[in-house]
Length: 577
Image 1: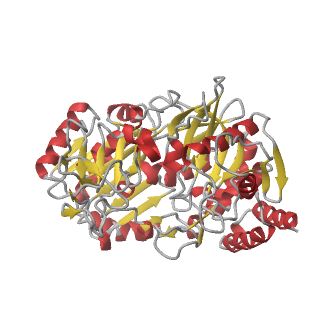
Image 2 (image 1 turned 30 degrees about the vertical axis):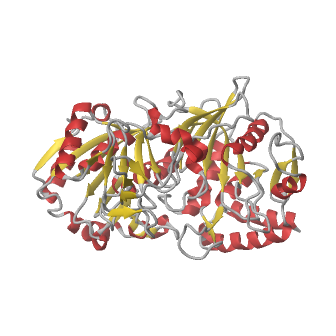
Image 3 (image 1 turned 90 degrees about the vertical axis):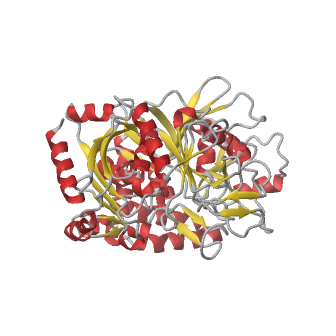
C-alpha cells in the first residue's frame, strides 16, 4: 500500500472520525452489498426488476438537487490565476473555514476510500484519482462513472500520481456546503452535498476543473465536449468533438441516430460530456472519453428525442429524483407513453395527473454504464479528431453552420459562444449568456489564460482540427424553428465531414465560411429556398451588435486577455465594414 496514500487516509480519518474505514475494490460483490445496505437503510429503492433489472431509485435532500456554482471555488494561491469568471478563496482561508466543517463529519458513518481511473485502464492519456467519501451512493455511482477499484490502486502502487478528493455529506445544510479546488495541489474538497456534480469528484471537479490545469501544464486539452464518430456508407469515419452550453442538444447529438434519409451513415458514441485531447505523433489531436458512464438529465429523454439513451438506462442504472409509477418504474416529464393518473413524485409524495408540480425534478438524473449504449464506439482508447464544433441557441444571429477561417479564428469563435435563455430557464427570455467553449463553470484557472492555451495548442498540433459553429435553433419572425433538428442534424454534420476531407462547397462571409447553395443535402425535407437562404444568412447589423457584446465580455479580463483575441475582434469589425 502506498505510504503517501496511507498517510493521507489516516490524516482524514483522524479529522472526520468515521466508525470504520473501507477500501473499495470495485467488485460486483462489493457493489451488491452496498446496494443491499442502502435499500435496508431506505436511501435506495429497488425498481421493477423485470422491466429495469439491477436498477434503483435514489431521492436526495430537496435542498441538494443540482450543482452549486455560487459555492464552488477555485483556491489558487493568487486570485488573478482564478480569474474574473470563477469564485476565488485563498487556500489558507479555505482550509481553515471549510476544514472546520470536516471535523467529526463522518462520525457514525463508514469512510470509503475510492481509487479510480479517469480514462481506459492502461491508456497513456488516463489519470488516477482517489476519492474519500462517507456516501455509499457516491461509491456505487463512481463505479459506473469511472474505472474504480483494484486497477486504480495497482496504478498508484506502481508510482502513478493521483488527484486527492475529500467528500463528506456533512449535515447537508446549504449554509455549510462548499466545493473547493486547489489547482496547485491537485486536490478537491466537497462538503454538505450528495448531488452528483458536487459529490462524484471524478466528474466536473477532476475531469474538467483540475484536469484543465493539468492539461495547460502538460500541453493537452481537457474539454466539456462530446465525442462522436461519423461513418460514411463507404466505411470512412471522421471523429468530431463538440461543445454546447446547456439546453442545446449535446446529449442528443452524442447519441444521434441518422434518419432514414441518410442511408448508410452511422454515428458512433465515444463520449457524451467530456473529452481529453492530446497531440499525437501524426500531428493530430487524439481524444479519449475519461468517463465510463453517462450522468444524464432524465426529463425530456424519450425514444423520440434519444432512443439510444433510453436503451442504455434499461439495466444496471441508478435514477436520482425521478418520479415512480405504481408498478415501480422510473417516470419523468417527456418520457414515452401517456401521463399516468397517479405517481409518487421525486420527494416521495403522492402525485396526480394535472398537478401543477413536476413529478420528476427538472434536474433529475440517470447514471448508466456507457458500454450499454447501442451506438457506443469500440474505439474507447483514443480517436483522431477531425473537427471541433461549438454551438449555441440563437434565434437569428448565428447561421445554421459556419467554418472558421483558421485555427486562431476558430478559437475566437469558441471563446465567444453564446446562448439565449429559454422559458425553461429562470429570468428573462432571450438574454444572451456567454459560455466560452461551454467551459465557463468548469475552467480551473483564469479563462483569459485558457484562451491563450487554446491558441498555443494550435502551434503544438501540426494538423489541428478544423473548427465550426452550429445553431440548430434559428427562428423565423413568428418565433418558429426553421431547421428540423434532431436526426436531420446529420445533414449538417455531413457537410462538416466533407469540409474536413477537402470537399463541400462554401462561400466566405464576414464571420466565417458558410455552406454554398445546395452544399447541404436537403432531399426529402419540406424546406423552401427562402428558408435555406435564411439559415445561411449573416446580418451585418446583428453582428455589429454581437461584436459589441463580445467587446464587453472580453473587457472582464483586462490585460490578461491575449492580444490575438482583440485582433480577431478587430478583424471581424473590419469585415463587417
